[in-house]
Length: 75
Picture 1 (cartoon, one colour):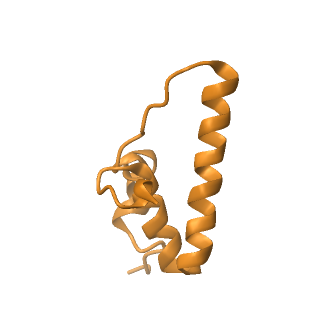
Picture 2 (cartoon, rainbow, N blue to C red):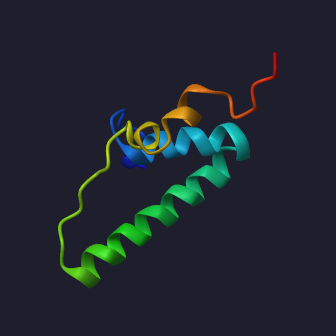
């Protein structure tokens, strides 16, 4: 899929995030599902598609992007 091969696409970042946790096949299905939803919204609402960008997930939750997801130990 071309969407996961572009480095600056939010779909490529989403694919890499899911691949790390669930595997390649599950990540591919998840990205396809995201694309189907995007196509549906474009066709139903008659709007243009705009890619959210590679840093979308980091902008949404900057603390999660910089940490490993585990709570920090108390001193």
